[in-house]
Image (cartoon, helix red, strand yellow):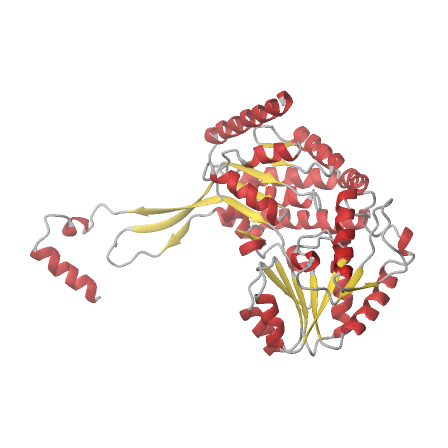
Length: 472
């Protein structure tokens, strides 16, 4: 208990130090911000091998190539885009003024909010720490980052690297258990960004409400994939298998279940089997496939599968291997006839189980998606404009990709964020800059103006002016 109190006291002191530092320099120049971004870029690229090795040790197995592609490359692209566009984003924006306020001038001035809190999950610890940090730095803020306790080596190394590179009153990384994480979310940050489960998202929002801290919640949910009736079927299956097996499905935007035209279920399974054999030959010992992060998460996936099977679902192995608790290697398994009430169909799976749900008409597929909480991502496989237009306009999701999976997240110019149960707010690119800025409206009145014409005492003159104003 004493240690817990000491950790929280240290966090509170750190937040005070950062806020005082912010008040001493509340509006960093673009050159200063760009220097910080380039410093972060160099830190990431110079230490990518060490961080990838730490992540591999934390997971039990995670291929370095996957880490470099899914985490470091995306952060590099985010920084490069910020360096290219950030100076323009900082500029004051002129706004129009209605005719009755003339000759006043209107503008919006982007200002740094102050100190940003960032809570990082375990599944992509570098990407989901550095990605929001890029937006925060571009907007001119300071930041405190809470890493996940489930990736202790990666978290400790990232804390060390940031501590060696940046002043602690500018960027700091802190580590601690779930109780410390709860205390972190209750601090009076100027903005708090949390990436994690919907369940914990509720707790974070409740804690932040104590100080009316604005929050960006990047949650998850059950992201659907819909294969259209006339889609390029083999491409759709291959692409979904690649998206579902990245990081062994431990991805917030992983396809959670797939809607296929009725009668195509077996064709999907057979093609997925072929694709798995090509992507991960000798699956049991293939070094490219990621392990499940912990024994607890592995056991949860087994419970989801067992409960679905007990309810009448059929499980279809897509490799020649079975789940191995020792290595925490869990192969991709397709599931058909899963009862709607089982946990597999109600909870975000966050692993390599893939329910297949048949549909008869596009109306039915859209209705199925809309009957459930709004997802973080939606994937549509179709080439005809009619299907694409209907699904785009008649469903709501945090983001959408057509004939692709996951890659909308890699497009740094697109905002990333959820809606409803899958989150609120967004970051990346310009939207990230706005999230961590106060877009301050400023009206400047000219010395000679008509304001006094509508001041009390009211009478015939004001009545006549109001009548005129209402007409035009």
